[in-house]
Length: 444
Image (tube, rainbow, N blue to C red; front, side, top):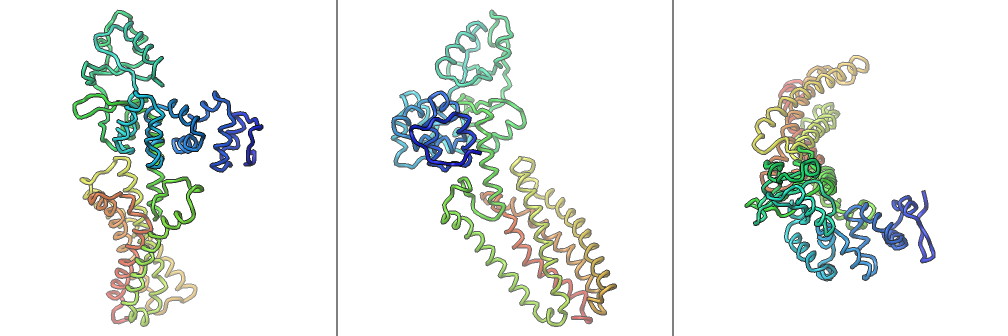
């Protein structure tokens, strides 16, 4: 691995060398290294970078170079960079573009970046149904020479841009030249609507395995296309955001090593403080059972066991449901099926832990006489409490993401630590209530 270093104009680095050292370079050094590449290598390298890195490079090179690279971008890539740039320089970046591209990019900027309209490229191969195959190929060559980046499918449109069908690139060249496009086009076309969210679009790609999906408006007029690589980056960002939220913090929205110290502190401290305040309720719940604990100190030994089991089972259920929702496997209407499934699962898991807990108490009593004359009742209290707490944990953990989605919030906000904290408090109440009933007139 080549170590990071400052560069001078006399340095001559190959594309291979820059790729090798890229991961250890600071942001400023990456810009310097990029500027040392010849134009051909720079073009090849720039388009292998992530959208975030590409934007950073373009926004930090000299203004004359900015105009060159902005004009080389596809409209959707240019729109992404402008959308991520500070408000005060957006119009300046738009000014670099020619008139046609400026109109295309401005139209894309009217969409939110996480919906189909914000992801699409307005440039695509279009043909008419009455074209012969020979005419379609000639027209395709003309389009590709002018502005098309890649061609997987050709979209068949009428005069008002309504989507009539689709022809694959392969089928076009396999067909006799005198045949009509309408003879070979597929009329049943999988489409995304312009306001569909990116998760739904990603599921379409996953389900149908297409390279490209057209985006249409409410009247089936085609607005642009989304390619699989367009979705890949957005899905990765979405998954990263969800994982960070599930971990009990705000989404960083920046690479880990690039986010500032105070910003990192702010994004983590809020949730951590909220969870800490929530755990204070656990102490309050235990103080409510102070008399029971003083009379049967042995019960306090199992408090961590009880509440951690409930929290862990709740975290499992939350993670499973959040991911199933993200993949479109479950919906709000499935809440009752999910609730019954998790309740039964919680019963099974609770019974397994109850057997393990009772076995442990019996063994320790046999070899060490740890739990006194009423050890069996103590074990029964712990075992039944485990069943109740685990069932409650799975029920709460599975329902909370659905509840948040119903209120319009991100289900990922139902983080595992949050669920664990919630179940901790109720676990204490369940444990000491069960113990009071079983140990009445003995230890209590």
